[in-house]
Length: 183
Length: 183
DNA sequence: CATATCTTTCAGCAATCGTTGAAACAAGGG
DNA sequence: CCCTTGTTTCAACGATTGCTGAAAGATATG
Image (tube, rainbow over all chains, first blue to last red; front, side):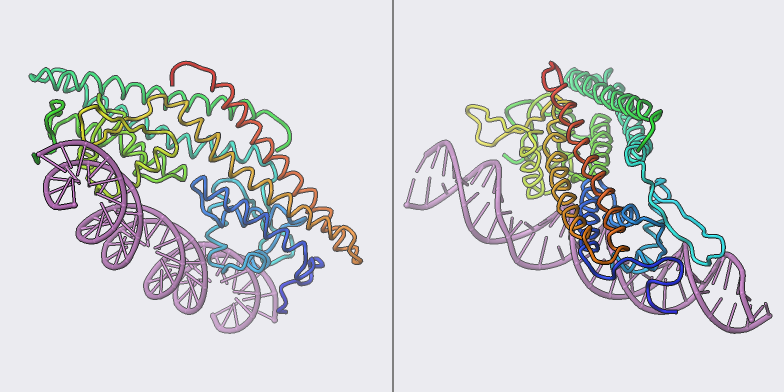
């Protein structure tokens, strides 16, 4: 009991064009996720699972991606927290297997609907706080300060409006596509 | 000739509630941009300019943000390359002044329309390349390999479709809001 | 052309982030 | 209960990124 592929299912070809294809796709998704402020490995791991016809074990995924089990474990935790990967337990099997969420749009929108939503909410709070402080200067003895306060209050109000607008747009998008079939 | 505020216009209050408000808003925007894979200082610099009733000099911006002129210069280069900041030259003035793009939506969409567009195009190319390689294995002597190739080819095709769909959605969004007034 | 003022570039340091390998932890099976 | 197998956590290290200060590059002025 040592080879990477064992009992349960005949493993794919150890090194081949298919592996290269997997690697390319995985790196492409990884790069996309990095651009969007996520971790590269989240994209790579998800992709390898997505391109597998059956749930993979940790060892298999590590081997295909050339990463340590520690990193894989942490990355899987991230992915599960976004609902991008599910853990599958085969009845008589000891080790767990991991399976990619295949409904891509739904997954992406769920992330937008929570991560971006949270960030935007926080931004709104910050803008509103800043707006409060700016308004406090509307009654400053110095007229120049009052004028500056007016201007900043107006711009801060616009920032609040924009952030609120983005939240609204986000809600529309997520709700619109929430009630659909297929991913 | 040394104080941060000089001739041209009476400078705002050196330290005040308004400055705190600016700082809060700047940090909030910075955090948002980081989340989206940009540099924090891009958000901070843009915000300070956006909240100023007149274009600021480099020295003023550095002072408000507590960053070096070197960093400011690099950040301004980034911002200009995205069209988020304009350089303004006052007639008899030696030093330049910087002014924020105030049409926020337009600005955001221009960025999405180029940065994300480029990244997605690259992803599409990678997926298509991977798909080619997978298809090469469709004629493998080993039936198991052929089956694996079929599965991967199908999934890769979906990835291509999704990426293309995203590009399309992006184009719709940008074109839809490109022909609008206000930012 | 020399000088003064402002901007950009960049080598080097600082801080952050990513990754491994090993230890701790969990969950059966003898 | 111990041993085996599998998973998670985490300290330490390495790579990447961010920032500064100083030097080089511009540009106007005398």
